[in-house]
Length: 304
Length: 264
Image (tube, rainbow over the protein chains, first blue to last red):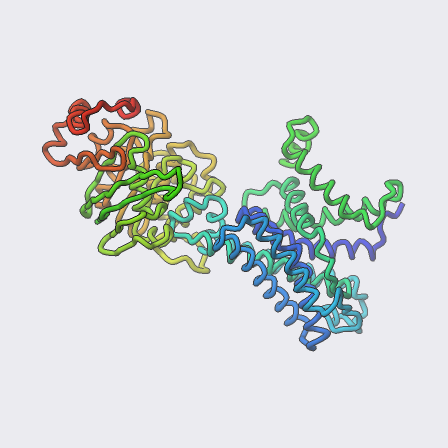
C-alpha cells in the first residue's frame, strides 16, 4: 500500500522543515527563557503578510522581503516582552494581547484577509527553467536555510550574550547577581523567537502561494509539539543536540499528522489537523509525566 | 567600602500590612573588613543584605559602595561591584549548565559580555586552577552539569564564582545554613581563606552566634530593624556566645527567644 506519494513525501519534509524554524523559536522562548510566548500565533501570519505585501505590492526582492518579515516578527516579540518586563503583564496575557492585535494589523498590512503570491517572484523562482522539478529542489533550499539557522542559533547560545540569556531563563536571581540584565535578555530572546517564527511564516506563504490572516491558528501548539516530541525522543545534553531534536521533532510531527490524515480507515479529514495535533501533544505530555508502565517503556526507548 | 546612611525599609507602606523592616540603619564597613551579622528571624539582617545587593530599594536612605552612590542602581549593575553567595546552593549556580559554563557566566559579571564565545582556554584554565586547591576533584569534571553535584560542591563553586574577576564586596547570605554540618566547616574555612587572599570587603549573615564570633573581624547584631550592638577588636576576641547573650539581655531588657541562634 502506498501511504504517500513522492510529491507528498517531499512536501511534508518541506513543511516540516519550515515548522522546524517555528520549533527553534519555541525552544528559545519556552525552553531557554522559560517564557510561554503566544505571540507566535500572530507573528507567523505577520511574516506571511509582510512578505506577500512587499513582494506583490512593493515589488521587493523575495529574499529582502523574507528578511523584512523576520524583522517585523522581531518587533512583535519585543512588544510582547516589553509589556511583560516593563509593565509586569503576565507573559501569557502579553502574548495573547499581541496575537490579537496582530490579527488586525495583518488585515491592514494585506488590506484584506489574504494576499495571493501566485505568479509572483518568490525565493523558489530561481528554480524556474531547471530540469529537476521545483518540488524536489525547494525542500533542499529550505533544508540549507534551516541548517544555517540552526547553526547560527547554536553559536549564538554559546556566546557571552547567549549564555547570559540561558542563565536569565534558567535562574533569573543568579543571572542578575552575575550582572545579567534579565529584562533585556527577555526582550532580545522573545524578539529573536518571533523573528524566527515570522521568517517561517514568510517561507510558508511562498510555498503555499498566499498569505492568509488565519494561517497562524495552532502555530504555537505545532511549535511546542515539535519541541516536546523531539526532546522526548532525543533527550539532549547540549544545546547543539537540543536544537537538532527540535528540528527532528518538527519533521516527525509533520509525518505523524500526514499519516494520520492519510490513513483512510481512521476516517480523519484535513480539517481534523488541529485536533490531531492537540491530542498528540497531550498524549506526549501524559506519557512523559505518568509513572505508568507505558510511560516508563517509552522513556526507556527514548533515553537509549 | 560599604556605607549605609539612615536606611529605612517599610514594606507595604500605607496598607494595613505595613511593616518596617529597617528603622534607620547607619553602617560603615571599611574596605577589607570581614563583617558578620547576626539576628533572629525578622530582625532585619537579610533585608539589610538585600538593600546592599539591590534586591530591595530602601524607602529612604543611601547606599554608597566604594564612593559610588548605588541607591538607584538595579541589581545587575551593582553586580559589577558586588558578588553574592546565596543560602540555597541551587540559587547560586545554573544546574542545567556545566561547571565551566557557570564560571564563564560569572566572568561576565565584571567583563562585558559580547558575541565572542563564552568559553575559551583562558576560562578553562582559570576554573581548573581555582577548583584544584579544594581537593574535590571538580577540576576534572569541568564539563559536568552542576545539577549532578552535591550541595556542598555547588556552594564551593558559587563561592569561587563570586570571587572571579574584580570583586570588591562579597555578600554571604547564610551560605552554609543549608549544608550538612560536616561540609559546613569546610565551606567556612574556604570562605575565610578566599576573603583573606583577595582582601575582600565581606558581609556574612549567619544564624549561628558561634559562627559569627569565630569568623571575621567585626560582629553586628540586628534586632527589630535596628543594630543593637557592634563589637570588634579585643572585646570581640575574648567574647563567648554567653557574653553575647548577656550583652543582649542588658541592652534590650529581654531574653533572646530564638533557639536557632544558640544551636550549631
